[in-house]
Image (cartoon, rainbow, N blue to C red):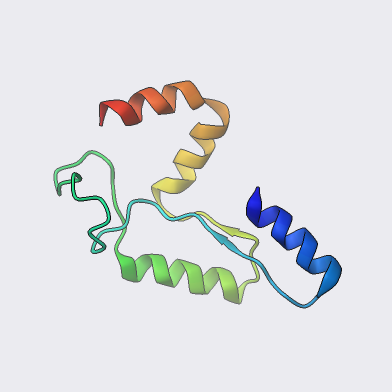
Length: 91
């Protein structure tokens, strides 16, 4: 919602700024989540692949880039929020 609001406000005032939202999945090689192990059931994406998705989205002037498993999580969170919460808690 923040990205959408920012996009609307900047398009009204500036007009030439492109705002893109990047919704990353769990990314390997970052050490941001020390409790996740290689044997986790949640698939992760390499940092290099995430960067390629982001650059591709910028080149195509996309509003939102949702690569990998984050596409499923975004859909599930929208339509099945309680189920997604309980699955994530079990992980």
